[in-house]
Image (cartoon, rainbow over all chains, first blue to last red; front, side, top):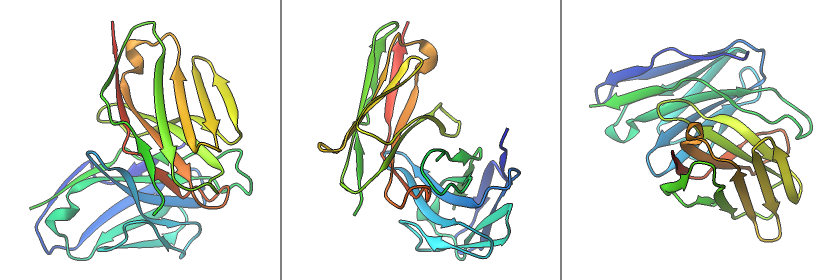
Length: 116
Length: 113
């Protein structure tokens, strides 16, 4: 089974701190994604990556950056955490398919980040 | 702005009945559509994908797609208490395979024994 591992289940940080959220997948997937999930808003895409050292902005990239130095690892960085970044963060990965027959996201268990 | 709209519920259905979940999307060019299920405190998991107009059945689940009306639905037959979860509709607005999904806000479904 595909495993997507997020380094922390719960994290508490102070306003202005630099925060790193780590995600590792073990199935050699090309695609990796970072979402945040807030009540009433569903999942919103922050950043994604189709390959090592490659990144693309999602729908809400402001205040975030990412790093993908190795294929299996995708990091989300909050340069200066703010209270409005308190949220559940979900990492996901998927296999690149040229067609559309096997589009499936595998999610990690999530990191609940609280910024005080 | 690409949007996916769902009724947030909660939707309450008696055990054994059919649960019907609905979703509309804003971009006519979308080609792939998904239903994810999320249990409380857990991560989403894919239960259905659909790419062509019409119905697609998988066990007790049927996904329905109407591209002309920009409408996707999920039917759950013979609903079980274990189906109680939040159901997320997702639409791929990018090229097929790119999996750049936009999710709806989710519909919370409760199956009453």
